[in-house]
Length: 301
Image 1 (cartoon, one colour):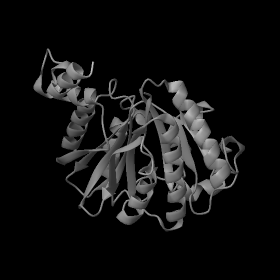
Image 2 (cartoon, helix red, strand yellow):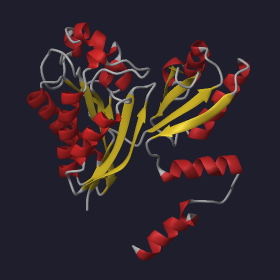
Image 3 (cartoon, one colour):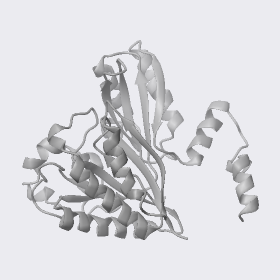
Image 4 (cartoon, helix red, strand yellow):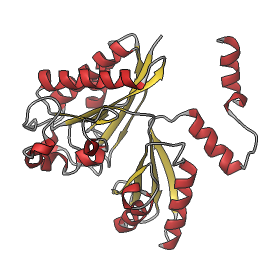
């Protein structure tokens, strides 16, 4: 059996009925399983984790995209998370008996289909990128939905698929293949967004921080605090615990407490084990000593 993961991000985090309609499109496929989904009011964004056989994943993601385009109008969308599309990003990740090159081909097929059938400009990113400046999703997304109407006129930003005009309500979408990514947020006990911005600059790669960390400061008005919102694109080389400890030290500089942290979506078991080993100072421990793993390996070898 071949398995692929996809984690489409939708620009809707406040109307649960809309998100559930989008999810229902994936539920039509018996060989696709929804592992997790979440909504965030302040970010106004939903993240869905799907896993399944490659062909079914492709069909499910396309149907979800089509439904989202019908239901989400970015002209009325406001949220703290940067966005450029009703379906903002669609990554494919190899899971079982699948290679990265297969996920790259998947991203190209579905990108072409979204462009031709839904008339949405599509940009290939990460491992699927057609140029170095398109590897980083943040570079593509810069300017967001409102700025893309001018950005797309630049020949450098002509889409890989679809029309050379921004979809009036659905914007544009990035599609690509990548490794596992961890969406990790740290909430701070202050309403001062500049402190969150300063800490984000301290940890993100583009401004001199960790190589595999992308970070922004975000206001959580509903909670009365601010957040350092991050994507960890390689948890092995920029581990969660190291990033978290750096944020704690930076927050101390400004006399601000860390209230809590959160992981959006799912994470690899290895990332959780590495974090546990670091904080508990375990010298001799690996995933084979996780009882559930041992049971599965014993009965399903």
